[in-house]
Length: 307
Image (cartoon, rainbow, N blue to C red; front, side, top):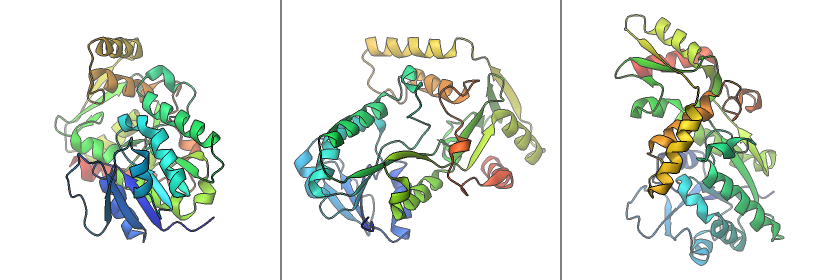
């Protein structure tokens, strides 16, 4: 396979993109940022910037000219444009596509029950259908990284709340889940693009840690013994059902901002904390060798994040 050098990124201005662009530049890739016409933000210096709507195959193909790889780092809602993006990549001769996953296991056979994965699942279907109609050699990789625990703690979206010094324990607290530092996402993308033949046409898994909430409670109480942390228990009985009811109600009410809805948060919680790992939040046994950072590192990072 031709060595990947030139990489185009869709979604460079978001939380993920702001990590991926510097990581790729540091790794020696020539980066092109593809922005939508309505995006007037000048995100980065030192990279090439091109403009294209995600639904405009012709404009995207022009933006993808001479690119060896395309990384889809956009908001999940934009995954509805997958067919146009893939068709453009094929027309431009792109070799490899990093699909818009970057979370929990969206290839798990049960995640359709949770509704929030539908944009990613639809993107997977569009990718498969478009490639099936083509004789081109575009390959793909779906990178799963779990929750970004450091970022989530800082913005108040984690079950460990540094402001109130509260840990929310859903269910038994024994359920394990895989999670990562936000910056590790950039490292994972670099690793895949440097050796794409190892990760060709399949989902792959990277994680800093695979732990349970009870383990986090023990670590926090030990490392921050001088602080008064409390644990709040939340039962999971009927939790997913209630979340789906809220989702259906939002649908009836025409809610557009799903990502920030209560239903979305609850469904995401149900995905992570299922007592039987039904939705694959614990993918520790699938993580690529050498990526788990170990408990000592987790202890140090949590102490720094929560102090």
